Image 1 (cartoon, rainbow, N blue to C red):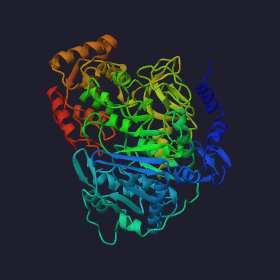
Image 2 (image 1 turned 30 degrees about the vertical axis):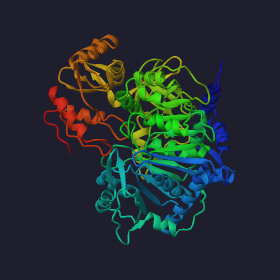
Image 3 (image 1 turned 180 degrees about the horizontal axis):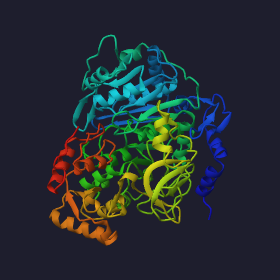
Image 4 (image 1 turned 90 degrees about the vertical axis):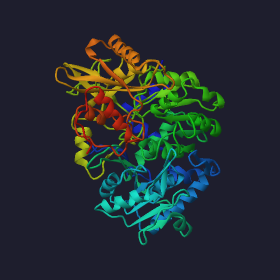
Length: 636
């Protein structure tokens, strides 16, 4: 039986211009495009050439002008400040227009860059949309990033203005931002003309006369700015990939393709209609926050939840359920790490019983591999479809997903289902030859990439080509390894640098992690390869146990080793595992496998700016030392 997904996918691959032109008709254009796809300068493809639009108009003004200004646009829910505030489309449009006027008064015009260094507060969204309103290019830097990391981004983006806040809140801790911002500007070779500082009540920042403006004062004296038409191919934003060191890698997203693709995904993938409540529990500093807290829900006319808190501890592991119940969330999107943390604190899901979750229809997981145990725990306790999907900062939206607005396919645990329309995904060998179904290869996307994907790296076309286009000519390199089965289900097993070579056998650490996560006492885990004189590399497992587990660690370790031997075989050479309290992660929940590996291999490592808690690296070093590794590792 042919499904709507099959029809959409086939058209998107074989007739992409017709497919995306139809999607673009759903958007507002000041001037229609001359050409849907310009392939005259491969691999620098451009979508909707000649078209003119405004991203902010499509996100806000369009809904106000169509009579839906009183509908909630954003629900700000901050358990860390005990605040809930709702902004209608009209209220948000007016705030954004006035902030755009503030930026205009500071000399910001079309094409200028503005860095946004803010916590999860509505003013961060307003700043992004205000830039888009006047054609400025925003670059959001995760609030609380170290000064030197912010300085490298200042040097690369050369912003005319920086928009920031006096502080952020991490759990119960107040993190002053202004000292970090001041230090970063001092370190940077490039200096912004001015900074706009939003003063939060819990921490007042000292403003520097002549450079810094108080947000409230500036807003009080500003007149609103109208939307400025921009070319579809003009940059909307620069987003630096997380964990960058040295020269940062700034992903560039355009205005036209971004609008068309993201608006299309809200129904096709997430089954969201205008007026529905959608919640992406991420941060505006990451691509998920850009795409699915700010832009896509507002393009669609939905209501977006903006959450300032943690999945546990603000105040407990029931905060997600409280928000879903209170705000009638239809679809939630978060990282598997968040649910593993909840599952660890509340293994039986007892806190779920305190809330009415009847509004919730679908849970989406992404950001890292979703282990089957977490998916199954969520299915049992939430009683809704739990959909794993796979994408990257560079792609801007899902490469593979169960497209719930087109057709719901049966879930295969360990797979994010099938390639999304627009993504011509293949598994290939090193010579770019497609491998047989079920065989692991490098996952690549045949060019052109669909609208909304990166167009280049900021001021660095050469690095764009080197990083993504050169290894597999005619294809985009995802740097992920995996396979596609006979039914076209995609399996993303590991980053290509996480494929380890054990005595000549290429093995996926992701496959081993899948086995470990099946153990009933394991809350989360990581497997990585460390150097071995005999075998080249051998795998080591790190286990975080569920709350309340009383059994001896040694017994659990023996059991997981036996499980890997049974399911993958002796060839995996999986003989070593240890129990740790926590795994080192980025603030977005990704495990810092590369850093752990350097520690294990006694190589100098850099503490990533994206790390959630630096102390976890010390704990990991102690665990590795106990296993006979990491004897002389030092941080740079």
